[in-house]
Length: 267
Ligand code: CIR
Image 1: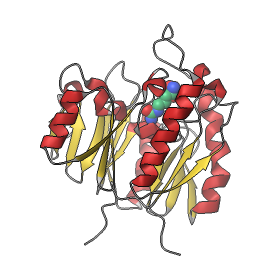
Image 2: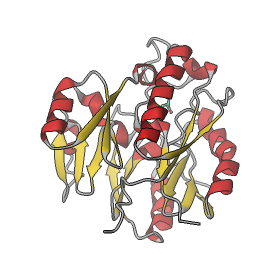
Image 3: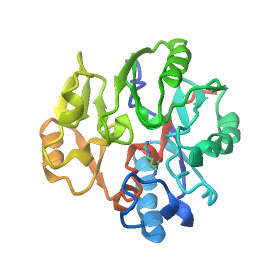
């Protein structure tokens, strides 16, 4: 049977959070700072769980000059043996793409740069088997969507241009893939009709932050503290691993943004 390219991964990349992480961008500027030590412990538990799911994970050193660099998903998108270096939409994150590029060049047969002009954050891109759902947001603009769509077409992806809900950082803050045809989503995002053609399981009211889950091989990784979402997913037959991401959440991060997940061609 063909591997499911949307959730079966052999390799991954993560980056240790820096001590500067409390300087990361957050929508709620008044919020509580993350504790860098607790963040680092939670990140270790996360990377251990990703490895236990069968992923050969490369863990990069912290980059103190970029407080948000632990969120490796945003400057890169990995597809079928290629790494696409994106252009993150927040000025303080521009340099993250250049910083990770040499690592990508050492691992991937192809590294492709999003052309100048548009912006895309990886957190706005949900890849399913055949489609890329790309959410316009404060970080991802129309030019970026068009440029990425052109690159992805070469890899056999159709692009569905969608909207990230107002006030929500990234498209995938509000949804995650459960399997090749099923998406877990907040009600507000699902109500936009953007998942037509997919089966949708909605996060229970009050558990919207559970929607930023990830499927890696046989496991669904879910933020802890969402018992009704967990029960719903277990009932639906998924193998659920819960992880505490309280400190990432203080700077608007979650499960999906702390890894790049991909499969490398056999050498
Ligand atoms: C930011 O605002 O860019 C970071 N503080 C959080 C990024 C989270 N990334 C993601 O959800 N893909």
